[in-house]
Length: 378
Image (cartoon, rainbow, N blue to C red; front, side, top):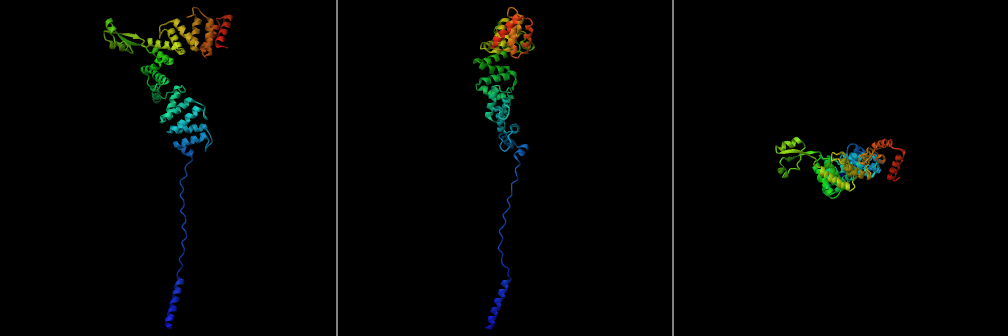
């Protein structure tokens, strides 16, 4: 019994010692939070713009224009808008066009505005295209924009816009943005001319009257000539006509637009178109584009002068000083006409006035000065 008790006690002691030697289990420490990985810092807007980023260039331009996030600087803004537009940003071209047109921070310049409206339109902005055409037709820019701009203006003309028809006619007449083509110019001038537009009549008449001479073929036999269906076919040279004509036809020199040109100019002149009046007067005075007729020349030059046409006044002064078209020399009329023309900024008129004054006495000079003063209304 004692042995059993001793054995039990020994077993208990052994177990206690073993337990005492076993290390205690430690509580795990909480894990450290993972470090947040920061995205690389974006370069400043100006740096991106300088590197060629078109969107950044546009935004920088807006910031500089509005003074938001940058010191307000319209000139610098315009430079960045221009660069962004050059790099394909249509809105940048539009905003730069508006700055120039409205004079917002820049000197107002509609020709520059038209240039940037054109750029925006070329980048696909239809509203910008319409604005460019409007500025061109209003005369705010004389640059039609090459074939592209000419096509836009022609589209407006096809829509029935009279001003656009005149502009397209002029483009074809003078070869502005399109190859010169007098037949096409005539096609565009005619609708507004027949519609009563005095400017269209003038342009059509001027163009026809100044058209170069040509050659046509007529039959030697009067009977065959009476049935000639090719009277309206013209050749640029006598040699070309002769080569085509053969033995039974001869080359005949003509001015194809002379008769019709005079007709249109007279219609415009009767509507009070001063430039048409002057053109007719000079044509009759020169005797080249129309047969020489001094009375007609003085009539139409006087009409133009009455409208304030400076060059017409100068021509009338020369005629009066020489006694041509007025029966006798008329120094008072000459001095007055020279003086009025000189007031229009014509240097030759000043010289003519001084020259004729030397041939006048004091009474004539005083009378001339009084007439000139009365005509000016002061």
